[in-house]
Image (tube, each protein chain N blue to C red):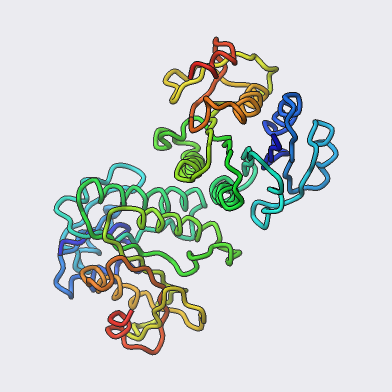
Amino acid sequence: MRVLIIGANGQVARHTISKLTEAGHTTVAMIRDPKKADELKALGAQEVVVADLEGDFEYAYHGVEAVIFAAGSGGHTGADKTILIDLWGAMKAIDTAERLGVKRFVMLSSMGTVDPDKSDRIRHYLVAKKLADDHLKRSSLTYTIVRPGSLTNESAKQLLKLESEIQVRDNTITREDVATVLAKVVDRENMYGKTFEILNGNVQMEQALDIF
Amino acid sequence: MRVLIIGANGQVARHTISKLTEAGHTTVAMIRDPKKADELKALGAQEVVVADLEGDFEYAYHGVEAVIFAAGSGGHTGADKTILIDLWGAMKAIDTAERLGVKRFVMLSSMGTVDPDKSDRIRHYLVAKKLADDHLKRSSLTYTIVRPGSLTNESAKQLLKLESEIQVRDNTITREDVATVLAKVVDRENMYGKTFEILNGNVQMEQALDIF
């Protein structure tokens, strides 16, 4: 498939480019900063499109069959950017996919979005992510919503805990494992229309994805 | 009618309490800070309920026939509060009205929410307000959405420009006039299901409300 990754310069997204390339997909990486283009090509991105979620980015969808939304305003910006990128940007990415007939959409979401009011510190972030997810669910797109818990840079474990809403949050998850999940679900039909949380756990990844 | 004003300590809301009282309505003022209770009673609020939009506030709806949502995080807090009050708080106020069978809901919104991308400085705020308005429109409630332009503390003009989307933004509007509109539309059937922008203009208020 020809897969567009929005927010391709993020840490999870970079791993995802590699995983998609290994799986034989054609990856289009959308970034704001053109200086990152060479690095992303080295990771396997066949095309790099420089575009801004806060501006016009429709041209990044040219020929695209699936979108992975991995953009995030990050911890270094204000909550105004949480609204404009994580929520409004995501909604526009979804609307653009609908308008252009790109049916497949994978959302990198966050654990805890089921009920933001259970969180104190990042409640506003979880609200923004939840409302973006809700917009995707209301759309006509074939979605998968992936909600990882706390991320680490450890090497991949290939072992998951995967549930609709994980009750016992007794682990973290590596960014590389999240990326593997994103890359795997993009054309995995049993994951169409599904929303789930993931941590590292004790089930082999393939099995965890099969039995959900 | 027994009308609940959420965010009753705001400047527009305070005027609204007076206007509702003059019109013979029973006003329930919901505020966070109990120290403001006496002031709001002096303005005409028959009841003051101390409750927080970020916590449990369902008990403020007791016996209520209409809700006016006039809460806003204001300019002194961060955009995290824009998400938690203007958007998430509003959505919960709407959901609570639906759940408890309060059919009538008047939203104090903002000019410019039709297309937040036309704005630079307060785009994130307009996105939050727009998404709250969209949630209300999707609900089963009988809504009116009032979108004033730049607010002033001048004395009431009683003259309006009122349009779905005002093209020529050649004026401001007094907070007292906005309050009068909120108080008038609450039981005005021709305004049910309507969304409009207002500035001060040259049409008598009653006529502007009648002909829309």
